[in-house]
Length: 368
Image (cartoon, rainbow, N blue to C red; front, side, top):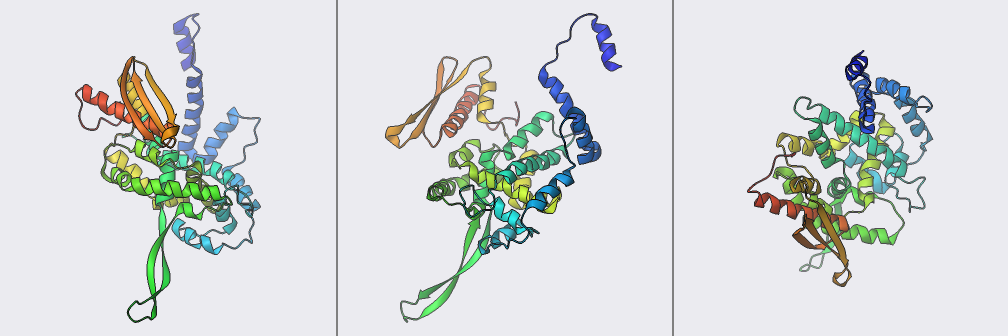
C-alpha cells in the first residue's frame, strides 16, 4: 500500500533506485529477523531470497563440522598452555590443534583455513551484537566506524602478539663462589602466535622480525588503547604483521564455536583477549577512530588526494610516500616498512597539517 501510494503521487515517472538501496532493504529485513528471533527467524527470511540454496539451521551446520573432527586425538603437550589461555576445555582437542595448524605443517590433519573463514563471521556477529546494545547512543556511522577498529587485520595481529600466558621454568645454575649447583625458577610468557604449527624456516624468520617491531611499538600502542583519544592506525600498520597472525585469532574463535556451539563462550574468549574492554573504552570516551586516509579525503573537500609511493631499494627496501592535495605537496614520509604503512602514516601526517592550517587543535570528533 505504501509503495502504491508513492507511485500514484509520481504519476508516470520512472523511479530509479540504486542497487545498494535494494541490497540494504534485504539486509535490514534479515537484521529485523535477527532482532525478533535471532538465528531461526533470520534464516527463514534469508531462505525467501535464496530458495535455490540448501541452508541448514545453525545447529545442524555446526554439528556437521563437529562430527567430522577426529574425536580420539590427544592434545599435544605444547598446546596445554593454550587451552589454559583460552579458558575453555575442548571436547575435541583436534579442533584446537587444527586452529593452530598452518598449511605448511605436513603432520596436520587439516590447516586452519576453514576455521579462520568461519571465525571471521563469528567475530563480526559478536562485535555487531555488542555495538547494537548501545542502541540510542550510536548511529549507523558510529557502529560501522568502531566495528572497523576491532575487525581488521592489524589489530587482530596485535592481539596475537600481545595476548599471552605466563609459564614457569626451572634452570640449573652454578654458584660462582661455592661451585655448587642450584635450581632457579623464573617466568616466561607464551603469546598466541608462538602456538602456531608450521614447517617452514622462512616463517620462523618472519615471526622474529614481526616480534622485533612489536616490541618497539607495543608500549606506545597500549598507551593509546588505554588513554589515548585517537586510534593508533599508523602504529598498528607499522608492525607490518603477516596475515597468519590475525588468522590465528579467527581460527581459534571458529574452533571454539564448533566445539561449544555457543556464541557466549566465544564472546568470553574475546573478553579474555581484552577486545571488548577496548571497544567499550573507544565508545565511552568517543575516541577518534576515523582512518587517516578517510579523514584526509574529507578534509581535502573537492580537491584530489594523490599518493606517490616508491620503494627505495638502496635503503634496504624502505618505502617512501608523498601526499598531494590538489596541486600542493603536503608531506613526504620515509622509512616505511610496507606500502600500506607508508600510505597510512603519510595520510596521518597530512591530516595533522591540514587540521593545523584550519586552526584546529587537539583530537577532532570521532566522525566527521
